[in-house]
Amino acid sequence: MNLREIKKYTSTEFMYSGGASFKTHDARLKKEAFKFLPSTQFTLYTLMYLALVILCYYCGNYLWPIDNGFSALGFILLGAALVFLCAFLYFLKDYLVRIVFSKKLGYYYKGYVNIPFLRNDKINLEDIVAIQILGEITSETLAPFNSFELNLVLKDSERVHVIDHSNLKSIITDVTQLSKFLDVPIWTNE
Image (cartoon, rainbow, N blue to C red; front, side, top):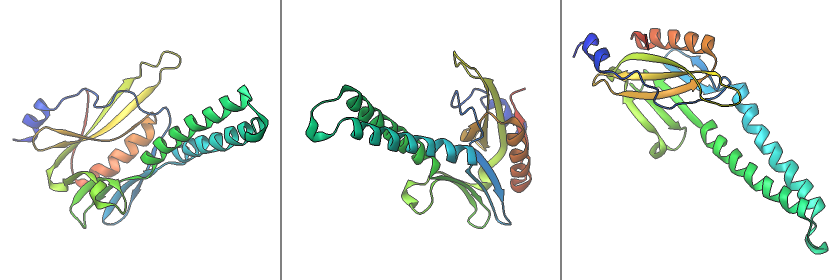
């Protein structure tokens, strides 16, 4: 198929509705590799949950010493520490994922750095024919925000999700660099 036919059959629906209300990744371009690494905002967001775990744990432990009986507030704070720990581990999992386009290896992968069997979305760079940017206004009830999704379009019109966040200027800059690096066009949902 040529590019026109591929574009005709490529969906313009969001692959993952929502996204982060802040910039989640920074692009790094080196001679033979283009990477998306966690941004400072994502690092601080992840560490915020760790700080909440520590705060709730120590406050809960202080208010509910094990040998002095039961304290409802201490019990609630220890429960909150457990909830924040789960949130921290969830975001840490996403934080540790690396997104790499390697000309040296000849493929794109999204996964964990030193754990090859946990690398998912491994794709030959030659199979990527375009980069797709989609925009939406999230359906958050309290504070809706714009979210932008970056997808790779493959030869068979299938798409692979790469990142999404709310910083349009950053997405445009990153996609422009990635487009030049891969020598493929950029498609929008127009």
